[in-house]
Length: 289
Image: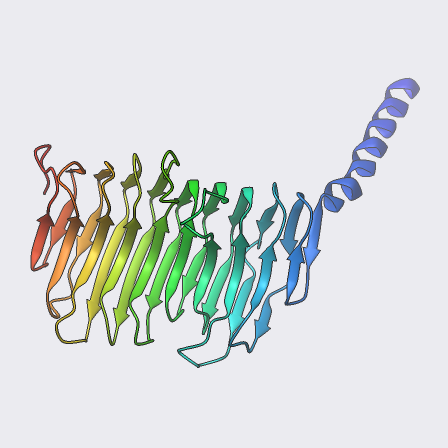
């Protein structure tokens, strides 16, 4: 019995000893203007409130990094609709994961993954998942590159500047031979409005062999004369699968459910209601609702 008790005690001691090591695996961020410089796991240690018109709150500056906000918020109190501050930036990296962030207020973009699409893809294998973004003036999520997955995010109340407004924008390199693969799935995009240009729930720029599926898009509109609103817009010569999405119009101006620039895009099992044009330039032979 004594040996059994000793074994239990030693096992418990070993378990307790592992806890600090597990906590150390997450590098806590507690201040704005932070650059993630190593390919490790980072977490928000508290909510961050800023007043910015330029720059970033957190920049992911290394391959292989993960940012887990753990439900904390990144808030910009600035109300300049033409400001260019972003909450989270990724500029030319791969194998990145961003999740569990609550981003609100006067940012240009909540999550901004950027590269020069005139060059070969620099951003690769990036996961953006389970974030809430609300009140940004230009983009909710902006993601350029390839191998990018945008899943289960909530994007709301986007727009305000005189330019276009986009809930989610994706696009890849236009260099010959470069891939442009995306999965945009299970996101809620609600209330996107530009006062001076077109508005888009989900906008794909030169994407190919990608999937836009199971998203809910509601109340995408523009108050600008001679401009249009699009729940889903896919531009370029690519062939994509657009399926299982629900798009509901606002009854304001001219709006489109699913608009693509070529008939090779497959659009099926989507549910579009109360929009001026349900489907345009799409292969709808698979049937929709």
